[in-house]
Amino acid sequence: MPLLEAEDVHRTYRLGRTEVPVLKGASIRVKAGEWVAILGSSGSGKSTLLHLLGGLDRPDAGAVRFRGESISRFSPRRLDRYRNEHVGFVFQFYHLLPELNVLENTMIPAMVGVGRFEWLRRRGEIRERARALLERFGLSHRVRHRPAELSGGERQRVAIARALMHRPDVLMADEPTGNLDAKTGEAILETLAEQHRAGLTVVMVTHDQWIAARADRIVHLVDGRVA
Ligand SMILES: Nc1ncnc2c1ncn2[C@@H]1O[C@H](COP(=O)(O)OP(=O)(O)OP(=O)(O)O)[C@@H](O)[C@H]1O
Ligand SMILES: [Mg+2]
Image (spheres, rainbow, N blue to C red):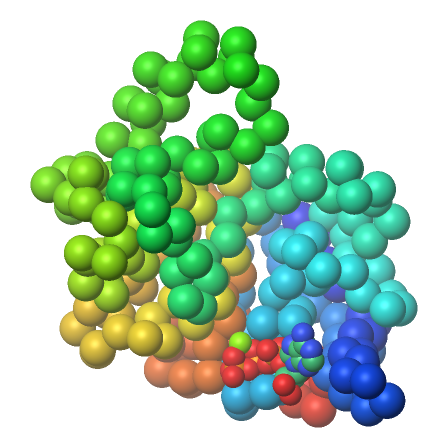
């Protein structure tokens, strides 16, 4: 059984009277421990597909399954839990909270869904884990800084640390090197490769075939389907 799969998913965006069909029966299977790259041109629906796999959006038709269970049919609450327990998401544009410092940004996933008393009881342990992750990514000297004071590569490393905070089963990365220069992008890819070697399942989206080539397997998204 694949860890994660999309089967014949359709997704159409509606803008007033215009319909924009983006996914037209896309299917993909991801095995546990695999690193899969979804390669496609700009506007081909890569982010749309990744959002469906990560439970950030639902398909109009077709199914998304995690360990054989259809997450597309989950209640909103159950879908939140799926995301919190199993998915780490790295967004194309970091999505760090500007008012929070690096350490606080990293701790966000661990704070979601935790009641006041549990937070008080566990905050020491949560903070230690966040510090350890940031140290591993070479950000120890930046924990008190706000995102605006960081370089692009540092921001992306914070975003990856945040995505790993709650020990997800799958890391989903949307153009993780899209806004970075070649050298910084290479360092980020090496960080993903390290996580993959440690056993993490990775689904990465990119329009760059050289970046996609770092994965175990490449699937092409063309005309709303996986070719
Ligand atoms: N919320 C939305 N409402 C309307 N149209 C949307 C929405 N999100 C995406 N689209 C459209 O759907 C198509 C696919 O978008 P998507 O973001 O999935 O592409 P992508 O492959 O990730 O592109 P890129 O490489 O530029 O990030 C695009 O034509 C886009 O304009
Ligand atoms: Mg995109």
